[in-house]
Image 1 (cartoon, rainbow, N blue to C red):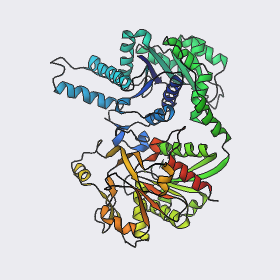
Image 2: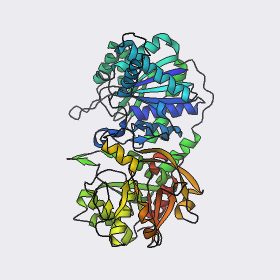
Image 3: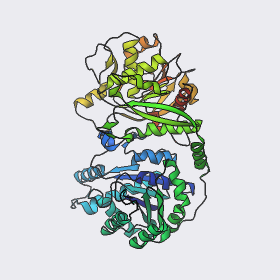
Image 4: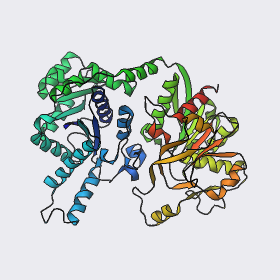
Length: 536
């Protein structure tokens, strides 16, 4: 097996995840089986208990693993579903080593950072590759060169390089700023980030030079000389309007060929035809469709974090481009809707995504009521489905005070309630990886809109929640116009609700956005965007 480590330098957020995903796509298109793994320096065991405003979206895999959002990039670019071996936080690694020590698996040996932790890291890398039967394992190292947090991941890289010299390369994604007061691209920060790697025994084999614009020959030469690389190993990676252009840009920069040469591999094929076809759809999309996403995980002061809902955004794009539409996506702060709903008139479709807690719930309910009454296409995802049920109970069934017990534990009409096993876990403060997680089968109602969109009777979708539709109220809703069109195979769990005589009003207990791919847009988003495009 071959190994490619990917690190970042100078600043965070320069696109290591996109770079790793793009490299994976290029190698797959060259005929190789690829397995990505994200090495996250956080001491959290997984991403499930982390605030999305700080860390971005929690991406859930089929097996229920709660991961970093970079795994969403991996899945979208590779068009493959990953598993728990594709993520390793520093917290999970420490926990595993400590559990082994408690089980006497080290047989009395002293357990230390090196080699105990580094051996565990190498073991995780090996497991990721084996789980996919990979020819090449891609290891993205979280954080930035020069930080304390990722030193052990870099040490594992160094040790693996010593053992498997010709099978291991390192790609460094670094940044060349253009200070506004100079107007000139500066290479010194990138040079220093490479020196930070050199200081811990790592010499990168290839540099992906991120900057606002393409590097000129002078900067490429300066960077090559200062880092000890050949000119061909400095790959320009300028900003792009569409992240899906990155693999094609890398291919044009001869990245695939340089990687294969350094790993002593021969290209088996060259096939980016479908990906280029998708990009052509992006370029030719011209009919604008305006979508509002109503939520609370958007802003802290003047700072807005779109990463909180990145899978929703990408799912909208996938469906829009496939249909020839150019999406215009706006954030709508639910806290501001309670007093003024007029801003919703600008949108052809509204999405209320997942979330937790009572904050700004009235704004979301007001948006849902507006969509229902004004016949505006609506897609409710997880919490957005639950709140659609609450809104219908309050304003159509006249159940005053109806709510979810997440918000009002003493409500007279608990139309959404917590499952008994989840209640026990919350009382025990057992929060980590205890929600209803991962892929679950869903049985679709014959002749329903969702069955028509999916084109089949049973689907598998990913979940992440503690609260469910209260079955005590099922008959009441069914006899009063709210259709339940998706359930668990045994019929005990409500998965999808619909409204008839409406352009599009669908709520899902699951997260369909997690399975949307550029080459395979999700059926529900396709249906939603089609309906939205007809609203003038």
